[in-house]
Structures are given as C-alpha cells and as structure tokens.
Image 1 (tube, rainbow, N blue to C red):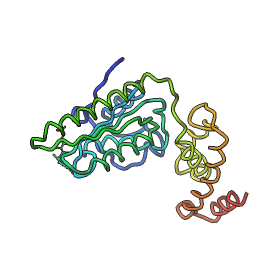
Image 2: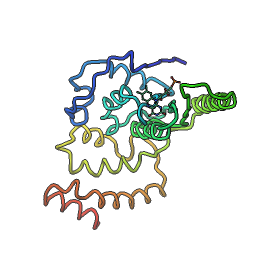
Image 3: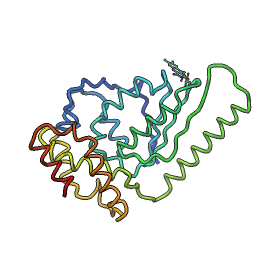
Image 4: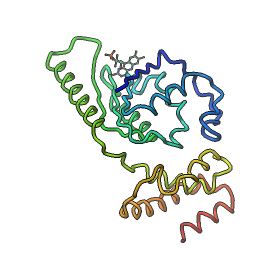
Length: 236
Ligand SMILES: Cc1cc2nc3c(=O)[nH]c(=O)nc-3n(C[C@H](O)[C@H](O)[C@H](O)COP(=O)(O)O)c2cc1C
C-alpha cells in the first residue's frame, strides 16, 4: 500500500479568488497554478483518506480551509467514491465536534466514505495518565476501524442520491449558468456511477425532491418561464 502524506504547510496552495471558474467551467481551468491538482491526483489514487486538522478558533485551521475552498467544485461534481475516510482533529478543549462535523460534511460532499471521526483533546498542560490512556485507546480503536474498512470490499453507499437528483433537476434550469455541471450530470443517468438504486430509496427521494424544490423555489425562480417549469413539475 502506498502512503502519501500531504501537509498543507508544505504545499503550495493559493487562496481561492472567488472567480467561480472551477464550478462554472471546469476545475482544470482554475487560473491559480499550484499544487492543487497534485493533491487531487493523490486522493484519486488512494484507497483510503485521512483528513486531519487541528482545531483553530473552533474550526479547521486556515490552511485546511484554503485547501477545502480550492476543492469547491468537487462538491458539485463528486468523484471520490469508494474511498474509506477517517476525520481526525485535536483540540485544547473546545471546538472538536464542530471541526469533525465540518470535515465530515465536506468529505461527504466530495463522495468520500466516512467510516470514523476521531477527536482527541490534547491541552498544552500535563493530563492524568488515565486521560492519556483513554486517548491512546481512542486512537487504537480508530486505527483498527479505518484499517478494517480498507480491507472490506463493501461498495460505496448511495447516500448522495438525493443531491444527485437535486442537481439533475436544477440543472435543467441552470444549464447556462453552470455549464460544467450540466455536462457532468448529462452523462450520468441514474447516479454518479453505474449502480442499482433500491425502490424504497427511489420513492422516498422522489417525495423529498418535491419538498426540496418547493422549499428552494425562490432561489431558482428567476423568471416566469422558470416558474412555469417548477409548477409543472410539482403538479405532474
Ligand atoms: C491559533 C490557534 C487557535 C486555537 N484555537 C483553539 C480552539 O478554538 N479551541 C481549542 O480547544 N483549542 C484551540 N487551540 C489549541 C489547539 O487546538 C491545540 O493546541 C492543538 O489541538 C494541539 O494539537 P497537538 O497536540 O497535535 O499539537 C488553538 C491553537 C492555536 C495555535
């Protein structure tokens, strides 16, 4: 197994300028030339991913956020399926839950398969040996769980089915604003990759989609024509 460690401090990663090109036109068209594609290739070639960040002011560190922002388009066009992932964070005392939940949310939107979240409190003062041993146990447990998951041949779940359907639906209306997304989803009929979606999931997502489209109707109703499309769909 090949191990690659990516330390954000060692990487040349420039902060996103907000030009929207990666999302709108394609990740490869980003004007910033740095190590982002190198990191993407490493993740793509990996069986497992360990996402780790210290807690800085109750969230991931700034450097981690720079990396996450540069990967924004992956939230629209996820490709990291079947990669077992663990999120790790350390804190002096607070912000662990927020940080780990955020890493889980981001990883999920890139299609990474989160198998465990490991949070460790390491204050900058001496702790009891009991506390120390508990941390060791947590680390051991997380390592075993992650390692076992790498060995299992269980395919990725289809938890992104609802977001797949939302994207598919909205892109009918937003193709001119999000052409790269439109092309990406046009090529994918039922899900991001060839798989069977269970009947129960299909039915429940069908109704969820109706509700979501209704809830976000104001964001996407730019004109009468669009309004007409949505009303037709909701009434069909
Ligand atoms: C800029 C900065 C901000 C920090 N913010 C927090 C915080 O919000 N909550 C907290 O409990 N610890 C905070 N810490 C402490 C670090 O999270 C803690 O030192 C780190 O997790 C220790 O990790 P290590 O033992 O792997 O070095 C902060 C530390 C720095 C340098």
